[in-house]
Image (cartoon, rainbow, N blue to C red; front, side, top):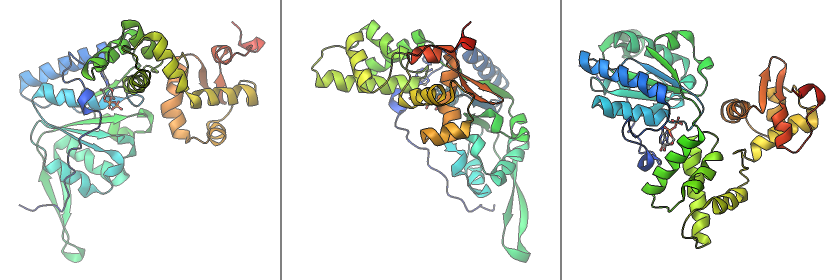
Length: 334
Ligand code: ADP
């Protein structure tokens, strides 16, 4: 059998692995999504087939990678992790595909950043479990068709709109992850605190939860910073007061906004009387990348009702003015 020249990407050991929930039951929040996936897993198992290809979208840190690992666990299979930008050439993805076992999950993070040629290789892989590879060079080059094991592609993206429709249409399930509620985040923080043996009161967990931007990754990160502060202060347990002071030192405000969020809003308010202002203008003025503003900052500001995207640009809404201690203009008042 011909072997394509490939280097198999090693499954990365991710820094967050120790905190990841291991089963759907341990995965908190995202109730509807979990129900849908539990049905898909149950049905696939009954039929003895791999799961349908699944596209997960939503802002970073909401648990897309974690969910993919859990799905593999639930199916009794392995999950191989890679990302769009690292699959530069078709042979990079072919190398991964031919080394999968039947039923394995291939998780492709940032799938909207797959180079075009690699993306096209995926089409037949997803649909017919087959890839065409070219062997040899010049006049002796031949195309050979390789049959692949039946695998499941789990794609993750922060921007579902950036996916081409041929790629999007090949996913049997397209699901969005939502921001977590404060009680859900408090639950996640309590669980992480137990794993890291950080003594914390329920109210302390809630204080951190309120400032976590609806995002488990941020919740876990803030908890670790609060632990540092508690240790330096010799505090026996994390209380709301202690968490509040520690997070204030990190410039995280009571609504979870950080320095960049507040700069964005204050530029809109101070320089543009609330807006509209274009994304590129905001990017230039904050020194942030436009995509980062769109994918990371704006979703939470919109969720909080602070910001609106309009055809003419971004607008700061009345609650944003109030949050920054300013009187909203007349036309913004209800
Ligand atoms: P994404 O792939 O969407 O960027 P991850 O899956 O890497 O996010 O999740 C980031 C961190 O948040 C993980 O370390 C995990 O511990 C935690 N996490 C995410 N979702 C949950 C959840 N539903 N319950 C508990 N912890 C979670």
